[in-house]
Image 1 (cartoon, rainbow, N blue to C red):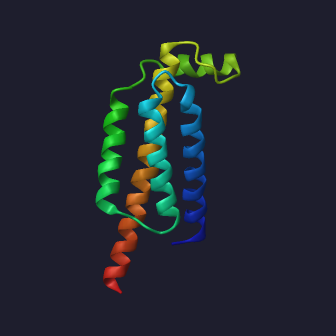
Image 2 (image 1 turned 120 degrees about the vertical axis):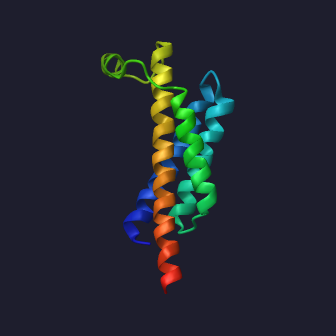
Length: 128
């Protein structure tokens, strides 16, 4: 695996750890801390070149399915609220739902990308 991908996944592993830490004061940390810790684990494993393809498929689908439950009703209004507020304090339920949606979407994208790269690596090994 190329060095750029290792840096990419290593960066996301660190960011997901940070996200998990920020969730400790969330109203429902029992859901979000494990979700981000698992994302950090997945990204760290991908950074080290280890891909558990079946697990990655399952987790990508879990994150995508969970994100559907938090589908934002109004993204434009949320972005303008966040921009005006200039801090990360949650003022409305809509802000919380939008943040959770995008967090899950990011988790699913990084996990799906890990699957995709792992699949390519697997195919290369089979051809060698």
